[in-house]
Structure formats: C-alpha cells, structure tokens
Amino acid sequence: MKRTSFDAIVVGAGAAGMMCASVAAQRGARVLLNDHYHKLGEKIRISGGGRCNFTNIHTRPENFLSQNPHYCRSALARYTPNDFIKLVESHNIAYHEKTLGQLFCDDSASAIIRMLKAECDKGAVEWRMPASVKSIEHSGMHFRVQLEGELLESRALVIATGGLSVPKIGATPFGYQIAEQFGLKMVPPKPALVPLAFPPEELERFGDLSGVSLDAVTSCAGGQFREAILLTHRGLSGPAILQISSYWQAAGAKEPIHLNVLPDAAAIATIMRGRNSKVQFHNLLAETMPRRFAESWCNAMRIDQPANQFNETAFHRALDDLQDWKVRPSGTLGYNKAEVTLGGVDTRGLSSKTMAATHMPNLYFVGEVVDVTGHLGGFNFQWAWASGHAAGCAIAEAKQ
Image (cartoon, rainbow, N blue to C red):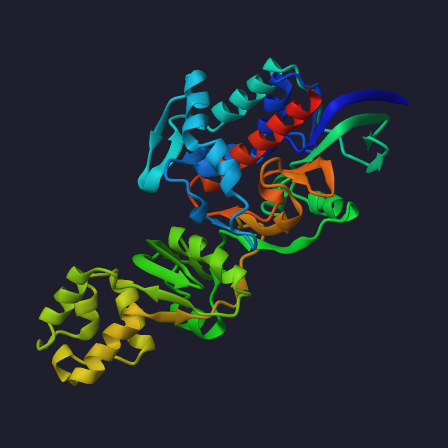
C-alpha cells in the first residue's frame, strides 16, 4: 500500500480548509488537502445568491454565538476583513458593498474558489479529491489517515469538514465524530440561520400569506435585528428571521420570538392620525404595511370595526400587539434550509490562538465544525478565513 508523509493533512476543502492549507504551505509546510466531495468549494459557490458574501467590514466578536463567547476574539483580531479584502484585490476580483457592510463579488462566487485554489497551488499543496477518509489514528508523533488504497501520515491534522447544513452538497457529521474519537466534547449541533415553522394556530391564520414581506424588528434571548421578514407557506423566513433563529436555537427553542411589525414611529403616527376616522382598522394598517397582512391580522384578532369605534384601551392594545407579536415556532425547516450549524466542537477544549486541541496540540479544528456561529451577512466566512489562517500559521511555526 502506498504510504506518503506530510507536515499537515487538512481534511475538508471548503473555505477554512483551503485557507489553512494555503497559509501553512506558503510558509514552508508540506500540506495535503483532502475532501470526499467531487466539487471544490461548493458551499462557497452557492453562497450569497451565487456571488459569495465573502466578508463583512463590520465584523466584531459580538457578531458570533458560542458557549465560549470570547474564543473567537484572538483569531478575528489577527486576520481581519481588511486582510481578506487585500487578498481578493491581489487577485483582481471585483466586489461591491451591499447593506450592513456585506461584501459580494461583482460576478460569480467561483472567483473566490479559484483564488483559494491558486493560493494553495502557490504553496504546492497536494490534493486528494474526491477521496473518502476510511479511518484516522494517532500513534507516537504522527496521525495516520487511511484513504482507499493509500495511507497518509502527518505530524499535524486539521479538521475543516464543516457542519451539517446543506447535506445535499456533501455535509456530514464526520468532523464531530473525529472530535469525539480524540476526546473532545461537543456542543449539540442545531440548524442555524434557518427559516422557522409556524405553530398550527399561526399557520391557520397566516399560512396563505406566502410571499408577503414586512419590515420588522425581531428579538429573542438577547438578540435583536431589524431587517425584512418573509411569510411562507410553512412559517417565517427572511433575513431578520434567519438571524434570530440562531438565538432561539441557542436558548433551547423554548422562548417565543418577538416581532415588531410596526417599527417606525412614522407608521404609528399615520395610524394615530386615523384614530377618530370611520376608516376600517385594516385599511389604516394597509397604509403602513402590505394589505394582505393587515387584513389577515385583523381577521385573526377579530378586529373588523372602524377606527372610531375602538375605545382608547382597545386601540392601543391593538398597536401593542403589532409591536410585540409573540410567535412560538414549532421548529425549524432543518439542515436542508439552514445556512450554517449552531454548536459543534466545544471550543473550551481548543486553543484560541492556534485552534488546536489543548490536550493534543497537533490536532486542529477550524471553521464551521467548531462552536462559533456568525450572524448572517459574511460573518461566517470571516470566521473561516480567520480560524484557517490561525491554524495555518501555527502549523508552519511548529515546523520551524
């Protein structure tokens, strides 16, 4: 059986894996990059509507959830959005800023994949792809990675296999299994940045409003976001819902989600001006939100009278209900619809400087496989770049 030795083997050729491999290799390490899937960087390719929201210029540690909330600080400080932007610009990739600091490729996300592949090639990274790992063992000072018909050896092993989101493009629990094999604890994984399902009573009331979008403030368990929400035939989606879904999941999926669908003072003032009019209440609401939602809301709340027939208490209670619509989701739409995975390898067993296991310094975990989950809008890619860069530097330094 063929046997080959390397300074490092990186398992998982996604964003974090390619970043780690290229950094370590360009600093003098002999690196092999492995992936079981037949398409390179598929999750990068489909991100951002095919244009890849590759970072966010406002990245801060507060944009990430983890049971060890300070863990991400070191890596993020040492490899910033500006560092990745410089790399993008060095490859002449055109990009633009959209809302809330998100940076997207002008053209295809494939440009980022080609850039990362080129950076790996610059360091003479070797590839085994597609090639499934049959087993991983550690003996003495080396890891042994068994592929089909080939045994690989390395001093360092990097697990960059991602989480469970989007299984149709190859997501598996492999990284979690390796972590547990080597004695690391897990934070139970859950779908994150994911649409939410209405409970039966809300589905009956609003399930026919698929496609209706509202400006709203969502809040739950300490998180708060103002962006669009989208009603679907199964529940709620849109940026504000994807954002708050992570907080709802982190809180154990027990708390209600609070929706303020009248977030503007101007909208409230418009309704108040009609307080003493003969206009039906749903028509007043329709001046500030989609008519379909206004009508369904009033039907659900049994409000069918003109505004001037409300007493003062009832009128303000109706406004309060619109500013604090409490929804208790029946669940999420699962990993097929999730952008990322919440939870993963417990970072309390990893070095925040190197990403290595504290009890096994040559075993590294980077990217989505660890319990660091970013907000929507390029933050998870920035974590991939930063964590991959940290591990790549540590591997190269250990070789010297």
